[in-house]
Length: 224
Length: 224
Image (cartoon, rainbow over all chains, first blue to last red; front, top):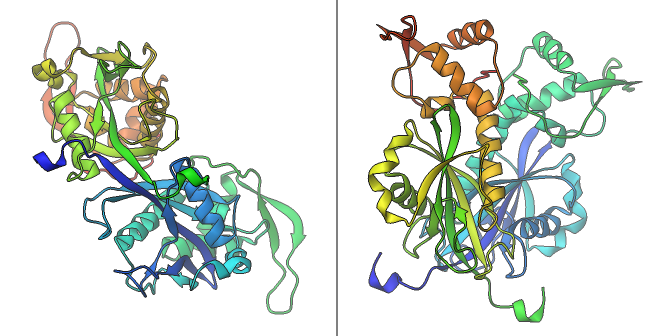
């Protein structure tokens, strides 16, 4: 610790939120276009500075509402990024979160708060501002890992869904194909979903049973 | 956001570290006795303020070394506690970590840095300073959860151990008895441990095979 450092141990605090949804068969995140100097024109995950009278999580919720028009979706603290030089404006420590949206269309009614805000497939991301490449990678890793040992996927699903749709959601997040027969056997054995007694209708496919999650609370279970 | 809040968005940053070890058949954490006003005489988990030129994790490592004389043990960021009133000295946001020590005796050679520093069983904790009760509960929950879906326990074990000692470590952390036969069958099926070819010697017990972990990198596996 240098002499100049002594007595000054404050930092600017911010939150960043990686907002996930499945859109058109792809795992997507919501990005906003920066207008501030240094990163003008770059895309970044939504977020903002924490007010002095604001708890850190409340700041994340406020920015989630602003960006995604969502106030009761799943939000989990991810990691605090505390490298010294991560922001050219000064010492900014960011408490990152990730959120899971059951429907990517939520955010559309609120899209005028930003210059530009768009969904990007995680397979086709632009270069991001700050250390947001790291933040996003960290979030994807946490989400994939947690999908295998918890029931967290329910936060990305609509209220009712077919088994094929649920399998497809797992495949999209995990980025791998699953065997249909094994998946159905496993998922039905977990006591997580129940048939609604209703079926899909439409001309393109045969009718399929619609399911729902029995409980919408996060539980540790071995899924895959 | 009130008018008085505007333009002031700095906070003091700190780290707190919940340092776990198994000592005399109990899951224990290392606590230090506070000398600062407000909490003088209270016990707290070790930690300290982050220097302006110091990455957050480096601060945690520095305080871990100071408290536990350990610089290469498992350290994982736990959670950032960001409630506004958690510290009577001002707005202090704490990035908490937990560490796992393979041997509780590590810390003893370094014990003069603090007024008092002691191991406490988690079953017999004193009232803690700040929100450290919450920090410790959060750490215990994370550790217990992670024990069931990863091989993280190797960080709490000596280099070689008997199956009984490994079972006892799981029992101590999870706070429940495990069936000996099922435990042995499961743990041997996971391809995590290997016999060293050596056995314990001593008069009190029959000789038992000594095992070691094959790999000391954290992996996601369903253990229990």
